[in-house]
Structures are given as structure tokens and as C-alpha cells.
Amino acid sequence: MIRLPSFAYLAPRTVDEAVRAIADAGPDGMLVAGGTDLYPNMKRRQFEPKVLVGLRAIGPLRGVAGSPRDGVRIGACTTLTAVATHPGVGRDYPALATAAGLYEWRKAIGFCMKKDGDICLVAPGSSRCWAVSSSDTAPALWSLGASVRLAGPSGERTVPIAALFQDDGIQYLAKRADEIVTEILLPPAGGWRSTYLKLRRRGSFDFPILGVAAAARLEGDVVREARIVLGAVASVPREATKAAALLVGHRLTTEAIEAAADAAAGPAKPLDNTDLTHPYRKKVTRVYVARALARLAGLDQGPAQQAIA
Figure 1: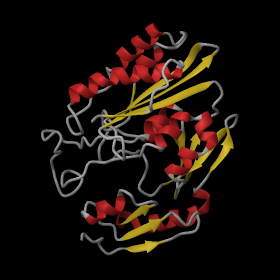
Figure 2: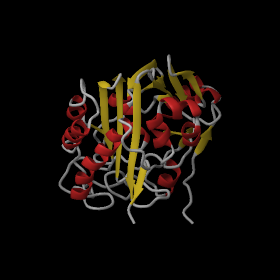
Figure 3: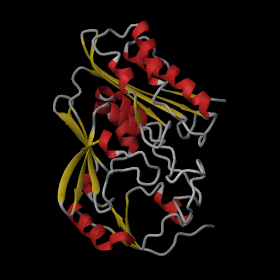
Figure 4: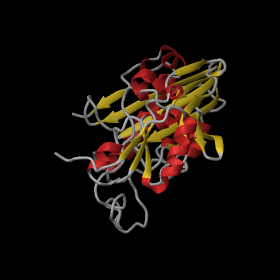
């Protein structure tokens, strides 16, 4: 049995107490909510904090509030199950509900740059970490135009999801170590349709080989705004801006969908560090983008995920 290293555990009752606790701990402290990634990484000695600041006792960090007209707030400690099964999220922000029900973030493991190493095992000649961003919810939130609220010693600030994630396998968030994510902010849902599709090896619990989040605001049957965001193809969710731009001002016809799907394959630059071959994963990007857009158009009602036997 691999055991956790010794550490002190603090359980603040308010966000302000948590901010002070993590600031006082400095580089020896880390935040923990569910601990799904943190505790296994501590057992492998990838992380060795002397102080853990737990967030589970802070009630305001849990729950879903708001309306599709004014926008929705999701507490940072709200479980994925609660998000996935919330009727309002499922009705007004279906891409997020689907993504939350299909799992979450994965970071590469092993003693590489992340722990005591000086090379990237994915790209040995690189000076940076190329761990893949395999989040399901990040591409969905990005496509919906969501933001996060951060609390730190200097006060609160709001950061768009598109600016929160960085193209670095280790420092993948533009969040300071002494800041706490307190809530996710979803904009008003009026006129928007969204969906999320996931490709993975198994139909059960597994990480995405590819994730495609697509959202479009329609007036009648004409697209006025659109976003397409790809997951598991790089160290950061990758927005296919040119592909989405091709849809604006047009109906979601088969021809428009095919043109956008062709353009979306460009930003997908998968590395050979997850399941299946990277040429296949780049090729299937086009297929999945086309399926996602067809779903927005009401032309496809297939499953949100596909498993490869």
C-alpha cells in the first residue's frame, strides 16, 4: 500500500479564511476539494505539501443558482454529478451537463518534468511539458463563454475560461497559487444551442481521446455567433475560431457544416501521448466536429460519446 506523506490539514469555514490560510502556508501549501487527482499524486510524491487547505466546509462554494435570462453561477465545489443532473443546466447549457457527466481533467503522471525530472517524456527535446489537457468540462465551458471568479489576498477578479487555461502541461492555469476559484459564471443562454461529444476507448469511465464542444447563437435558422472548442488535442483546449467564423451569417446546412468541420481539423495538433495514433485523432476531429454541428442543427441525435472496442 502506498501511503500519503505527513501533512497538516486545515478546514476553513469561509473563503476569506481559506485565502488567509493558503497565503500563510506559502509554497508549502496546496488547496484540496475532492482530492481525486491530488491525493494519488501525493502518494506518488509528485506533490509533497506540508499543509492542505480543505474547501469542503465552505458552504457557499457549493450549488447552482441564477437563471438562463440573467446567467447562472456554479459554486466551485459543486460536484460534477450535481451539475450533470441539474435540470436547468441540462435544459439551458446542455454541453456542460453532458461534459460533466462524462468525467473531468487528467494530467500526465510519471517522474518527468512534473516531478524531479528535467525532460518531457512526450517530447524529450522540448524545454516544456506537453501533458495533454483531457478535461471534458473545460472545452464545454469555453464554448459557452463562461468565466471563473477568483478570490485572493488582493481581492476578487473574474477571468474568462478562454484566458484561464495556458498552453503548458505544468502551469496550465493563469491562476496564482494564492488564489481560490470560488464560482463558475455562465452568461445568459438566450438563443444559444450547445453540445459536447466525446471519443474514448471504453464506454465506461475513461479519459477523452477527443472532445468537441460546439455552441451557436441562432436568430431564426441563421447563426449569429458560434464557438467550437477541441479537447484532448493539446496541452490546452483548442478553439477553432476560423471554423466557427465560417458558420456566422449562414444556416446550419450540410455544406456549411462540412466546410466548418474541414477548417476545425487545422487547430487539432494531437501528440503521441494518449490512446490511439495522433494521425487518427486528427482525422477523427473533422468527423466529430461535423457530428456536433449536425446535432446543433437537429440533424443528428446520436450518443454524446463513442467507445472504441
